[in-house]
Length: 433
Ligand code: URA
Image (cartoon, rainbow, N blue to C red; front, top):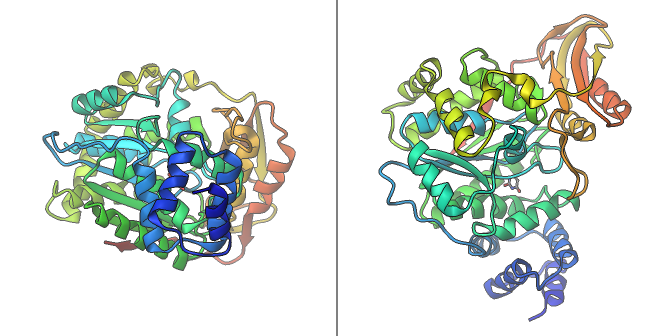
């Protein structure tokens, strides 16, 4: 078998066999197949697609590139959530400690920034000293003690996703239903959680901008998860507007801490609550959705979720003092105010442009080896539906050495202002089981 022939077949939209897909993934994992051939494979999948069977084989081969954890020895339900990627979407940082404080084990394996969207791992690494690269033994040890730990793809768990994820990020091959499905589900299957909630984003800031594509992706992931015997739920949630008011790594962690302290209740908080409630219900930890939502509120107001988050920082060697002293995150040297071009309602925000601008300021990568500036990003003072006066500050850019001018243009033109008040955004649009 040769990689060339498999790429050729997929380029011509022919179906691949289980053996061909395994050959590519094993070869890539062992570095016998080069990045440039996998890049070509990814692009041919982007254009030619994979059917359900091929997607299952790809997910299986990616999960099998490392160990598959068996967490049945833990004395409680195991659950995880994963988002398909958004702008300002740091909900995992709130959901995981809330679930852990409800007695649910959360073995969370996340990804880095991808395209214009942020990544949980980069956000965690904004906490000085925080280690996302744990060995499996250490991961399990923390999981047993704290009920949750958050790590990245490792050389042991879904290693091929780690390599392919980085490649997709810089080869414009992210927005593909089978590639997103296999990337997410290989990690989720390998990390061993019994209950999985997927947050599939739709709208201008999502990889699946159309609702129909988001629904197809959600159904595909739910079906793949079920084939692996997992209890699956997917929500389709809004990404036509950035979530919350922070975009960028440190800014989003600070927003998380504010939510966990009970100081902040915005749309980011609302989505965290909806997602957590669904998992609490899914794992049988509450009898109905109302009591699940109440449990979420209780865990925030009692400080238990914050304590779990703090314990995770400590277990994973981060500087715990960030919880009280946000200056330890380091502040960007420069700020630039974006102002409203006219008076009226913010009728929409071009969310992808906000994500791109944040990357340009240093919060994301445009090459695999780019170094992230954790303090860079954007604070959104005005969101969709808000009333603004001409000249009022709508957003502030935070940056160090980046060229901010183009980012400023993008953010400024991302705000659409109209005389008519827009309809309120529905955060969760659908739930698929
Ligand atoms: N998150 C992932 O882990 N993979 C993707 O492809 C997209 C979002």
